[in-house]
Length: 456
Ligand code: ARG
Image (cartoon, rainbow, N blue to C red):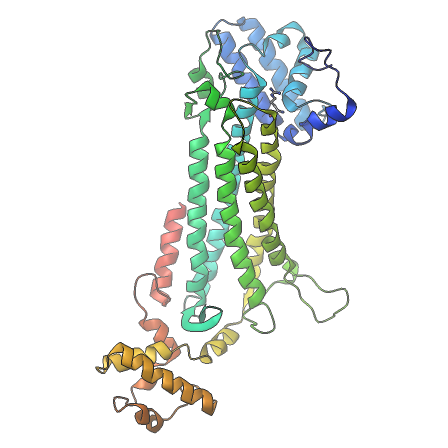
């Protein structure tokens, strides 16, 4: 029989019962549900709403239930309507009358809002830890290759020389912002909804602030209808997770490209790549592809949450039960991805020679050649045109800028002298880019130091 049996018999049609039940996905909040109830009993006793004795019996009973669930001696009933009714029913089964007093000045509406906030606080913290770990791994890799020259691309065309350290530190910067967004979301979520009750507060002399403090919240929701209806925090965290996945997916795409035969910039460790069932030569970047593929799931979770909320009148509506599967899936997915992505990046090996070879072709020092002419007094726009003609000349002769003779250069402009070769030396091109945030070794080291400091 349902806890709400009374007006109705509390017996549902079987299909309706399964359809209505949320135990399948909310049972994972058992600890938060019990923690919330312990604090509620304490507050009720503190305020004299229930006796100290009943309060103690309730707390003891709840903690025993928690212990039994964790030890495996109590199985959560998969037939229960939700985790809240399961815990309450189990408590009453164990301690009788006092158990029936726990739900005074409380509704499942504020209870579920509380449990979800407590649960997601833990999820956000775990995810932030993983993001920090990934940032550290990236910093470590960048520190190993601060002057490993590679082509930087725009439009997937070789553009200007950068370093591997510089390239991957871009991802560390994105991750710093991701960490900031998750922490911001968690901070805004840090308001206790308990005591909002069904929607309109209560006539009992409760102390919401005391209960919030017991639960470690920074404050309490100031409007009871908002407190039970707000799922902004799910949307906000899910949106931060969607961006995490965007970044992981872009990085994955590069790892997939870089490990192809065409690039050969990196090689994934055997532990993080797979073979083909038919083609013996294959080493496939499945982990990176799955990370890229799972991005769509998290976007889907975000859209699901936004859409679920957009038409809901205040206050609680059962639609809101759908929040949990979406936001839980988003956290589960991101954590699963990071748990594989972090060691995959950590163990990938780098082929510096392939990167350097790729940087030698494709005229990525053409801008530097134009800058050289500018240093000799030519206006940039004229230098740009002259170098464009030189590149066309080289392409026709099938040679690189380095291979062109001084005589051939002078035929394009009198301003050239033998100093041009140093100007277009790729290592020099990188080293001279000393502007803040640039690809040179010193700059990459500063970026690493910046990120490591921010991570503290
Ligand atoms: N399982 C419900 C949920 O997740 C708990 C709240 C139920 N409230 C209610 N009035 N039926 O939203």
